[in-house]
Image (cartoon, rainbow, N blue to C red):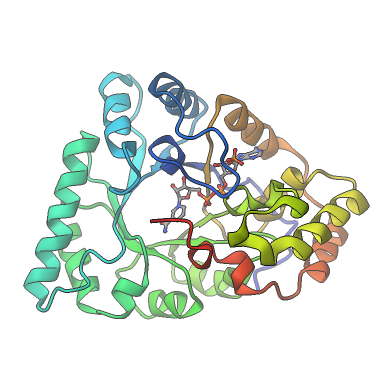
Length: 310
Ligand SMILES: NC(=O)c1ccc[n+]([C@@H]2O[C@H](COP(=O)([O-])OP(=O)(O)OC[C@H]3O[C@@H](n4cnc5c(N)ncnc54)[C@H](OP(=O)(O)O)[C@@H]3O)[C@@H](O)[C@H]2O)c1
């Protein structure tokens, strides 16, 4: 555990997740992908407000190309771009040479669309692809040494992924879920900080699941109903909206270097900047939250098991 979670000096910055700007995404999504003009406005407003990192991937629909069009006309300092090697791309690669060339081809495809002046950060979209095939780490490091990628790392789904990162010096970037229902990352934060890794958390709102009415859940997330009921009661008990509880719980956790948050509208973007400025939760409030959700089942907190992504 890191020290007192309330000793937060400055909150972790928002990293703009952009899957929502490229394809239908999120368990609560009703509106689909915003029109391009709105998406470009969101990227511009985020950059103007000081967001320095955008998160994207080749399988986020038109997200990388959208960022490329944004960068074409953005006069300020270029944001850092995190892109990914899509889960499963290297599944059938037998040799290191094949792994390397599949990753490189994907990266060069991303670079072409992004049209960024500096190499993007590169992470494996699913850490399992590296854990199951350790050649991947050498290939990522080679791409970094060649100046084609910036920093490299993994996007985490399981605790074994975090153990793997701790064992591999060159893996600098960690993107992992962290929210009220899923606090698995917490026990690793001190060690990740000691090793100087960069930790970006995602799923603050669990794809928007936290805002769904537990009585009318899509089939895929039915097991979440009792936990969402409890979250509603907790929000009333503490006197803070679910949005504030979820955001502040992650924001005030020490050891996070950024919060990857996706938005579909300017309104949500502005709300998230407002949330960044709110006072910290008290220690009692944090303890109440943690006591309420000591062990949420994986079927609830792991979006891979919802099988809503293809
Ligand atoms: N493996 C990976 O590398 C991976 C996996 C997943 C995501 N990501 C990245 O992480 C980013 C965030 O995705 P996530 O799954 O973690 O989602 P999230 O940030 O937990 O939730 C985002 C969703 O919450 C809703 N929302 C956002 N701000 C809100 C606010 N202030 N009030 C109410 N609702 C709000 C929006 O959905 P609605 O309006 O539809 O409710 C939005 O689409 C993605 O854009 C992507 O870049 C990476």
